[in-house]
Image (cartoon, rainbow, N blue to C red):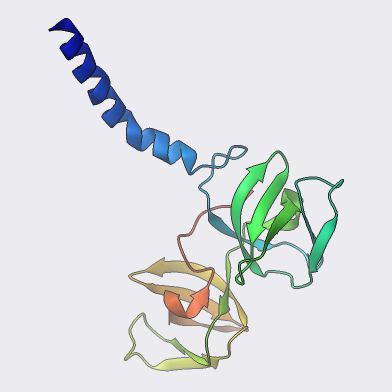
Length: 167
C-alpha cells in the first residue's frame, strides 16, 4: 500500500512540474528568454558563421540592417539564427538588436488605418519591404513603413509572430 501511495505521489509531482520543465526547455540557456524569438540585425554587415565562435568559418554575410531574424539557439555570446528562407547560422549577440521589424511577404499588401479589412487604406506596401513592428492583437499588427503607420494582418509579414525581447 505504501509503495502505491508513493507512486501516486511521484506521478502527481511529475504532472505538476511538467509545465515548468517544458517552459525551461523553451528558454535560452544564456538569457532565459524564449526560444525561438524574433530580433533584428543591428548593423548592415553581419557575418553568419557555421558554429558559435570566430574560429568557425563565415558561411555568408547579411547586408541588410534591421532585417528580422529568428533566434533559435544560444551558446555563450553567440546566437543561432534563422532567416525567412530557413537558412541557419551563428552570429555574435552584439550584432543583434531588440528592435522588432518585419518583412512584407507575398505580393503588394494594403496597410490599413485600423485592424480591420474594411478600414481605409493608408498605403500599399510591396513584398520585401522592411517595416517596424509596434504591437499585434487579434492577428493584426501595428507597423510603420517609410513614414506610413497602420495595421496589416500578421500573416502578410515575416517576423510578426509572438513578440519577445532579444539578446
